[in-house]
Length: 190
Image (cartoon, rainbow, N blue to C red; front, side, top):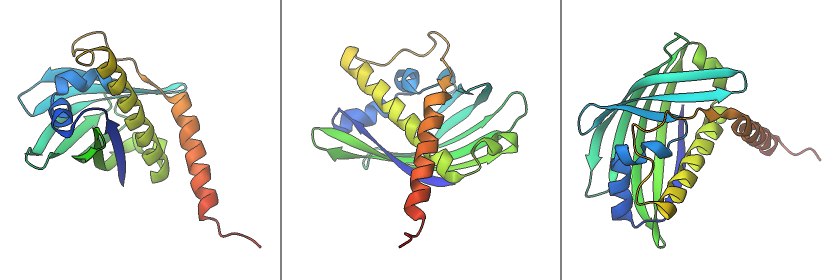
């Protein structure tokens, strides 16, 4: 499934570009994520933990910058993660580019995600996955803004273990978004 998101960052485009390529610096701002290893300048290993009520999912995997176009401030990241308990896996290709926006920058993100195994059943409707991703991007943006306001960088990698994403508020928002989209698509009855 494919979807698009945007993220507003209160830094000029050139600084936003440098920040987003500095994985060690921003890893602490990604909800539920933990950077476990820097393989090389473009390859990283990590974990993502998500808790949805009584269900806890954990994906371990690798992300790699496949393309980096500094002149146009755009990049492509390919990532693969699998659940250590064998419940499934996720493969994604994330393209992002940065554009000027007022005093800051806007990050335009296009994501193509393929889920397999039991993990795919948690988000059968692509609208639910898209809403969930939008909420995660929003949380990442808020965390990034808060860190930029307080410190010169986000929490350093290798610090305390990442706290799993609490899914209750995300699920409520996703359900509300799904119901709202459903009512918008229904033909009006006169």
